[in-house]
Image 1 (cartoon, helix red, strand yellow):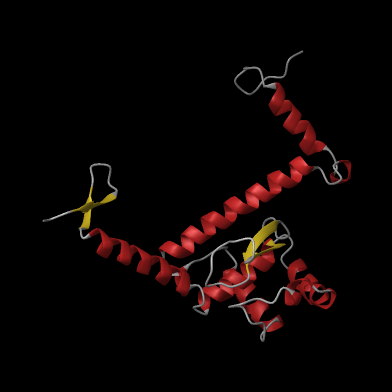
Image 2 (cartoon, rainbow, N blue to C red; image 1 turned 60 degrees about the vertical axis):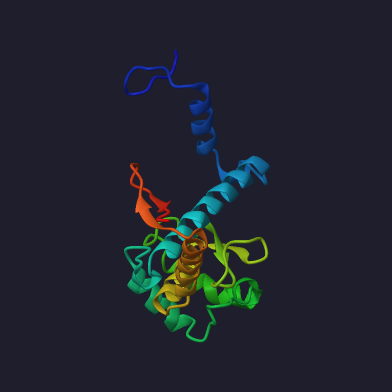
Length: 191
């Protein structure tokens, strides 16, 4: 008997295979490179979207979760002296740091979806996502640090930098902004 979807169409073998894979316990995978690559790709996509977001709007007004206020207050209560503009990986990854971060992170289990999902975090918030400037962190750690960076004005450097580059491009092109028929900005030379 062939599996069908709600519309009585056959479900592809690939979809059945994915469904079967997702039903297995984590222990059955070990360190499967395909699974690790899929997680890494998803983390990179998240990083790209987040960077575009803080590049295009004033980050101080961003709301990343429904519980930003709670995350921020708990974070600053527990890590009031943590320097967030340029992170020291030891303050996130050392054994003593993990002991301090673990209870903080677990407070958000059931509150923040996928709170412990692997996410990419920039070490220096004035820079983009590069191999040298990025570490892997739990999602709640990412939220705590990035919400604080946004609220405390550290991520503003990113949006200012992008706006400055756009201004330089306008000046170098000798034109002014216009709108093409597709609704996108384009250069209009008025010589």
